[in-house]
Each structure stands twice: as structure tokens, then as C-alpha cells.
Image (cartoon, rainbow, N blue to C red; front, side, top):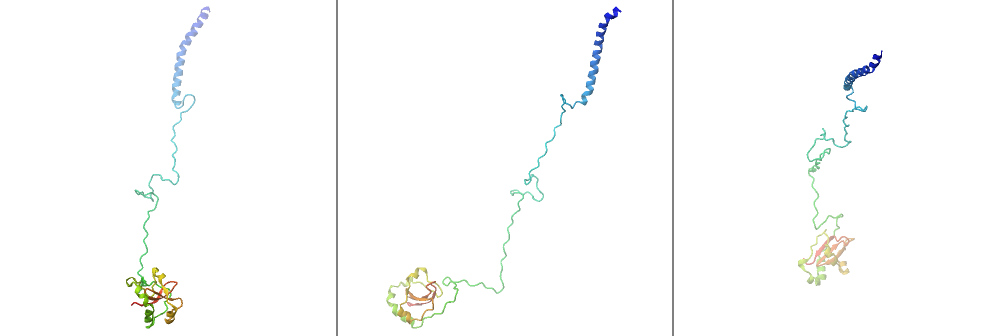
Length: 208
């Protein structure tokens, strides 16, 4: 009994040394089996997350997406989405009705008048009477620079200030002019004209 009491401690120590390697080996195998199941887990209890693809951003409305649209074919040098401007044909010329004639153009000396001119004519003896009265003025006339008057035309602006009215004795002998007209003398001419418009109704060339 005393021998057993003295061998109890060495036996317990030796048993511990024999069992410890077996327990370590069994624990390593158990950890090796559990490792593939928890391979996706990170140390500290965190799980490894897979990278996610970022969401695709859609272009704002109204901006081109970079792909040609079927209704808007791309043309080089032209902005897309705008219609092509085509020339508008003009109106076709109208030849007019058969037998139609355009109105005649007025001559430079006789612009179209609104009302017809009233008639006025000098008598055969009026020319001799006016020549005798204005004979003393014929020597001062430059025959090469005299104006040319036309019945229905107008007195030029440069000569309107040089007309002098016919004196009353001569005016009483001549036929009276129509209402609104006067008789004036200038540079060898006795002219019946309208003082408001200077339109010529009739004239007499005393040097002719």
C-alpha cells in the first residue's frame, strides 16, 4: 500500500504526457474539418462580401445616347434631329387671258393725269397780236437754250420762277383760260398752265 501511494504521482504524470499528444491531434483534425465550411468567413466574425457592379446611369432625357436613331439617319456635317430645308417653288407666271394687252406706259413728258384737260385753242390772229406786243424782248432770248414744252406735260422746276403773267390788255383780247388756269410769258412762249401743278394746257411759240 505504501508502494502504491508513492507511485501514484509518477503514473498520473506519465498518463498526462501520453494523453496530451492524442488530444492535440484530435483537435487539429476537428479544426481542419471545420475550416472548409467557414472559409468564406473572415476572422473576427465578419463575412467577406462579393463586389457588386455599380448601377448603370441612364442619360437624361433629351440628350443623344450615341446610337443612330432609325428615323434620324446621321449625315456628316449636319446636326441630327433637324429637318432638311428645301426651297419652296415660286408662283408660276400667268400668261393672262388671250387678247389681253397691258396698259401703255406714259411718256416722260406727259405723266398720266387724273382728269382730262379742258380744251383751249388760240385763234389765228392771236399769234400776230402777241408777237407785236413782245417783239422788244426777242433780242434777249438765247434761241439755243430755250425750253421745250409739251401739251399735258409740266413746266420744269428751273423755269417756273421766270414766268410773268400776261398784262390785262392782252389778256382781255385773248380767249379766256378755263377756271384754275392762267396765261404766262417766258422766253418767247405764251403758256396756258395750272399754277398749282404747273401742268401745261396749251402754249404758243412766238418765235416759230
